[in-house]
Amino acid sequence: MKIRLDNVVKTFETFRAVHGVSLDIESGELVALLGPSGSGKTTILRMVAGLEYADGGAIYFGDENATDIPVRERGVGFVFQHYALFPHMTVGENIAFGMKVSKVKRSPQAIAERVKELLDLVQLGGLKDRFPGQISGGQRQRVALARALAVDPRVLLLDEPFGALDANVRRDLRRWLRKIHDELGITTIFVTHDQEEALDLADRVVILDKGKIVQEGTPEAVCRTPANAFVMNFLGDANRLDADIRGGKAYVDDIAFEASGVADGGGQILFRPADVTWREHGHGIAARILRVIDRPDSRRVLAMTGSGQPVEFDTAPEFPHRKGEQGFIDIRRPRVYATA
Amino acid sequence: MAHNIRGKPPRVGDNKIFRGVLLGIVLVLVGLMIVAPLVVIAVEAFSKGIVYFAGSIADPDTRHAIMLTVITALIAVPINTAFGVAAAWAITKHDFRGKRLLTVIIELPFSVSPIVAGVSYLFVYGLQGLFGPALQSMEIKILFALPGIVLASMFVTAPFVARELIPLMQAQGRDLEEAATSLGASGWRTFISVTLPNIKWALLYGVVLCNSRVMGEFGAVSVVSGNIRGQTNTLPLHIELLYHDYNAAGSFAAASILAGLAIVTLIAKVALERQGAGRVQRPTALAGADSIIPETKP
Image 1 (cartoon, rainbow over the protein chains, first blue to last red):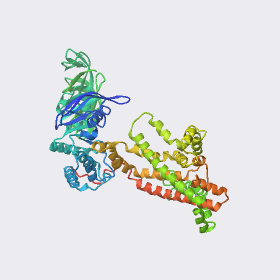
Image 2: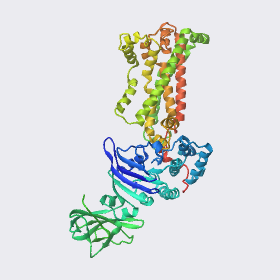
Image 3: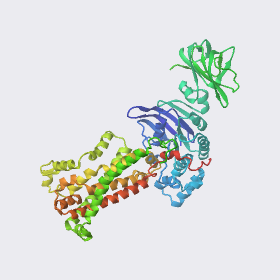
């Protein structure tokens, strides 16, 4: 099912949560809505579900205008952040619930068969008669997914699907969800504030800030060409140095960086900690090492440039330099943005 | 609690003497204020023998008072239960202006003396009251009759059910209802199969408390009922009447019925609280229990 958001607006009593968001999602696509808290990502998801109504704009499912279709009839599968499993029902009853209340009548045998099928799909075959309180967080997550899939939704929506889980359970479930998605081919949107999760799982990442889309694209596109400093910062650790932009060049302490297309005036260059080489002599921005932090696979160096701006970068564990030493930092893949 | 070798209590604040004194004060007060009066009721009720006790209960006026009390409860409790559920539902699952104010107003009867409630009903429905003349011309009798008794009882017990449900339903949030709706359940279906099972113990508890208060209400009812023996006397009013008649044994016999009700309520309360414990939580509250069953890797 193709989904289209056309200039969707949502205002809550005190603040505007979503400002005119337009988005096209292809049938069978797996899309991540990524943003910090308060960026409006969950509100967008809930509007697609019909749990919130848009104040302006329209939401299309295929060619059908779904903006005013109530959630009951919208045909979406929604997985809640905290799963919202019915605590008084067994795992099997939870999964069967949607089929039991459906307008499409199914025989008890048909429902039982489908429950078994879904339990196998989410690999929880033996847990049919357990209560949600008796299974682990990761298992609850999978029950919630099976329950959402039971109603044959046109769209699957997941709100922070791995938010409440341990780091290693998260990674496993992530890969597994991708596999399920590929098997079923159902259009899926999920919300996350974790960039690693979004990049790992999604075909396309939509990055939101303050209720607006700031960039959308494949994980590769958003990683390699972040649209602005916010995206660059949000996707991972980044250093930021103030720069002067003059005639297509950005100058930091007299070192010039390519900045074609950026307007003259105040600017900034951003770069990843891994994109720095430390030199004792030669080309680069003068800096002094303040501290060296050891990590299992690298050393993180905290330094200060000649003009007093902090820089952090990663080096090999064998990095021989110490606190107080002077040198030069050579920056690869810098990104230059005008100061907003 | 054993003291360690340095003669200090095992934990801060766990001083043996202090604990003993504290417990002693509580036990003495409980004995004097709660246990002794209940024992007196039981003893006095049977002071002239079981036959006299049975006779007192069988007295037509007493039987009428018991009947009236039961009828009042049968009307007031279901209405207040419905009211309580509706109020708790509205307040916890919907947003609207004046929500706080409504919450405060619902709890008002807790802080208003029942006698004030009774008197205010006199002003509203009495002959000289607001609606008095209109009601009289339509020959509707509210005061000094069953409707007045029911209304006064309902006023006093209005908050009981809502009060039990609101904190619970607030803690539960809206997730479950949203989940049920997104799966295609109607509002009614969601209430019956999702909301109700998760509040049933708190609801029952509220109903039990409401019932015991309706049956025991004295102040408000005494003002609006007119206290007519054998006609508008509920059990608590009847007990007072018997007492003023110097019929101590009869009065205590009737009182023993109310005391018995109190004990049944108490047992029900304990049982319900035990049932409720651990069941009222939703999965979010159980998030810490992730390690109950080892994770099977997908």
